[in-house]
Length: 34
Image (cartoon, rainbow, N blue to C red; front, top):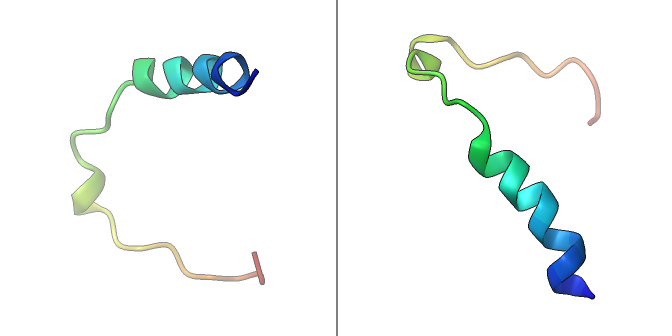
């Protein structure tokens, strides 16, 4: 059961395109508790 429920989100995250400029942006400021 765990293999079935975890595999689809893992595939979706694996297929997401990466951002080449992610390290050029400053960190976001925390405005909320979460």
